[in-house]
Image (cartoon, rainbow, N blue to C red; front, side, top):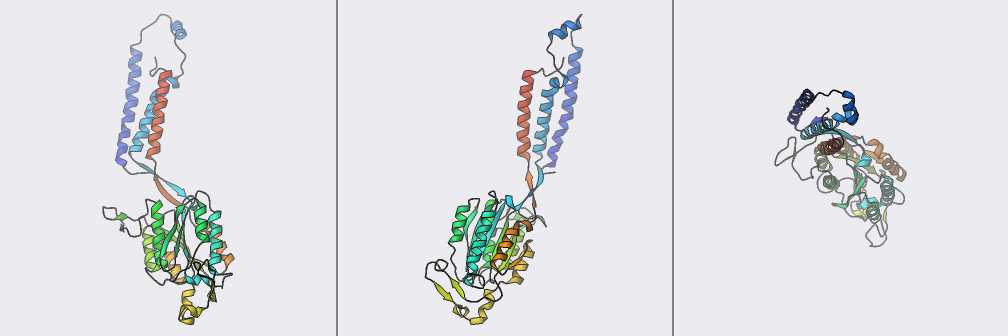
Length: 357
């Protein structure tokens, strides 16, 4: 346990003084006792009380004051926070290359199935957010425990041109910042020390309990680079777990009418995007960059070339995420306990004498 205001612990020095004063009052009361000729008569007339009952009200008040003194010092404890009790931001690539049929029936359909199953398997306490990206990134579903809007969004994904991996990471960081006050937005100034114009960065090696799972099948083609965005995420303690999806031999691009936004069924071959085979690199996951993103943020890179491999990666992901330790201030709990102890002292005093005779 650590304390935010350790000097407040000095107030606890009053407790020994109160104990000394209490003992002095007891002895003084006994010295003033009136002598009786028959002790037996007094014992018969007086109610029977055990020693602990006679001292209970004072002990309860003393304990309440101790709790208040500790609360004033703002005690903090570290608690383990598993991923199942926090949040996962899913960042999904919906660029045109997700129409590639090297994964049956195409990459996007396989990804939708795997991600939908992942969402349904998570604990009801886990908040899940959905970021989709092609030429730009957007937060499709803010972090929520309601699975219905997530599944509906996954079922209605449509493709677009371009792949903005860096923008997806930044948008995911903003989604985490919405629910975690300890995580600064992507555009906030973060430094190693607190101040009016800069937010403090997390201690080295510590991470936010929320994570980002980024699934992409290509390389960044626009906007902020993935490595620049990874540095922003790392400065906020947000870990990114990239998944490179698809084979290194993408074939025909075929999307359904729904995946194309209702424009009809299309069958694209690689030359359809211009550049012929020279464009193949943009249809293959940039593993080197994705590995660097994982290393920079403290996450882990995964590769999946088949639908069943992707499902296995997502199913096993919680086991790869280390339980994190978050510092929580417990002052309010100590203050609440103090209030209960005071009420107990009042109740005890109303039933038993405060000072022994």
